[in-house]
Length: 490
Image (cartoon, rainbow, N blue to C red; front, side):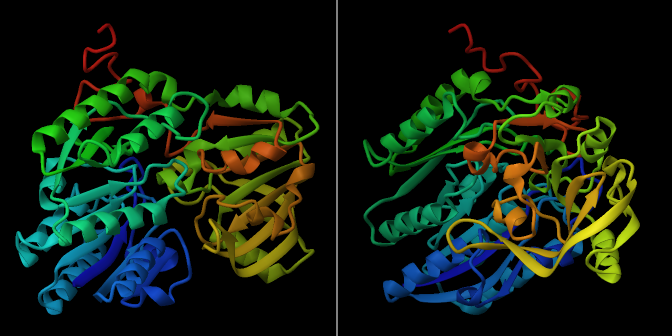
């Protein structure tokens, strides 16, 4: 067998005013045709998994571009088209292949392209023809409709949010493709539109863990090959946005539609209990004034880069100062200029520093403050899963009014507690820790925090869906509309 593998992705927030350019892919993850050499990361994992599996089978592997950028606004047209055309050119140059395996995000939008994944895969299909199999792994915060389903043969989404199963899902895609190429199965796919938007963590107390277990229990039985709940990406103003249930079954299109509808309706029934609750900003600051035996964790949800925000607002930091909260930490705050200045003045220096509030209108005002440089680290990183690492660029930790602020030159979420421990922040001793995350930190902090609040802060990624200026989103859709499927009383 001969297969072609590549990666291309980013998650696009259409409410973010700053674009995603080619440099953002270079900064996050970029590998040209040698995925085995890449540092283990969430973006290298699927390609590395497929390469190892294929080589173990004695298959020939043609590698192309592997590129990912952190979430932000729409990708520039030149950036997208150059990467797309690089992959398509490599596919043409490869000659005949038996299969194509692609790791894509599923929520990538570019100037002139509402659905980059569908555009790319349809063009790939035109090159390889109808007999070559195309398998895709997608993030569960994706947009999908029948265009992509018809262009591909196998689609598998992450099952977990927080995302910890990217390599596991890569194995699943490979397994299904291997069985398809061997003639053991003939995948048929179908979607069910759940007419919902929101955030539905799979580890949160409530019905989602059980729903995920039901999906996994159904796989491998009665012709069902794979089930995926695509949660959708709620900060995208697109007609196809929203939650979709995908069923992949063996050789029976009617069964695929029936199973997708069954599980889609099951999710619809639990959607309200499954959605992530948010705490008002003022309430969170009031609770942050209290002292406990362990830190209070405040998730600054509207300014976390994982949903396309810049990660440079100072609303929480300013509120801490105004409330008299001192034994606190704010991490990570993206400010390359402030980091550069800290490196120039050196460790231990005291200076007047302008922090944050630089990148877009939603960034809000900068904070001007007296700062002491506590820690400097060049070209640093944080851990992820296993031996995976995330680049975070240069790091400066400063103390402002008794509050330790971790500044980075590259945009990042907190993926591991070592983001703080490696850079001198003893988080266990803090009264409160504010992190520019949405949910991925929950399990990390659970053993060492007295409480975690998911706070509706000001910012690009406002979690108040009814307040977002949607114009193109197809209506009716929950929670903007009460019961779009008319099933609540059934």
